[in-house]
Length: 292
Ligand code: ADP
Ligand code: MG
Image (cartoon, rainbow, N blue to C red; front, side, top):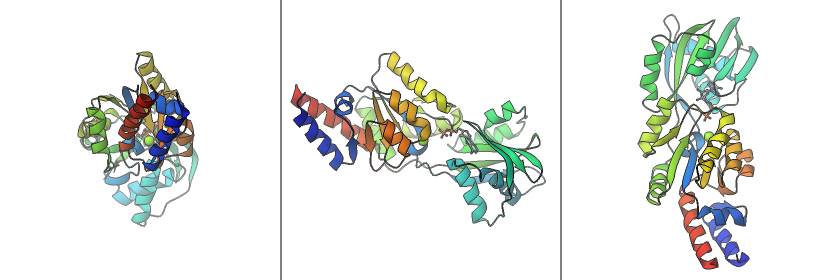
């Protein structure tokens, strides 16, 4: 390999908003046949906002937000920010929470105003033995529109659900189309539930989905695709994605994402625009053709 061509390639990438950390990343890109892509913050904006409040009988929207927001103040998850933000927008006064705990991939628990609270997904309800009953159908309706649903439980009873939307980035549909046209196999990876994931994937024309994935399993999924003989690029933005980025043949971080993700990746898309992946593949082909 002539270092010169690679230098030129890296420089050209940088001008187009694609930072390539090392020669290997540029060389390998050409052989990539599978792109595993995180949903939240990579395909979507990663800034969810509350779009629906469905309180149980006997409480209103503000009370639902008050309990949920008080609990979520202890969490740094984007979903927590959405809930606390919605409470503040409506001038809901939050209380202090105690015994706060984040349950990875599921939600949060703690005590607020003497009540035992849990807020999170269906899996969290299941681990706490809470019956979803009629709430399951309401959740499905929101999830089929691509929304993420969180259930609030107080003393083992569902107090309501909160639906959040995280819009698809403006640049994503076109980028996905050109990656598919380039013959890449696309796999969407998410900690979100299957129904929500499917709705988002459908909008983008992505057929393969790995949903309900716990953070510690993201790396394993990338490894499985590699063991099946594929050359895998992984694109992600979160702390959760770092092991999977490191596990991939080419790790691709969103420049808009966390530092941990950027450090674990060989390639950074400065503006967080996935179109940079298609450009990097072309660049890699050109550079490698020059070298051979
Ligand atoms: P991702 O970032 O891919 O959505 P996570 O593992 O962070 O994956 O979260 C998976 C799911 O766990 C979320 O979709 C949500 O249902 C639930 N969850 C995680 N953190 C919280 C939180 N702070 N509040 C409510 N629900 C949460
Ligand atoms: Mg993410």
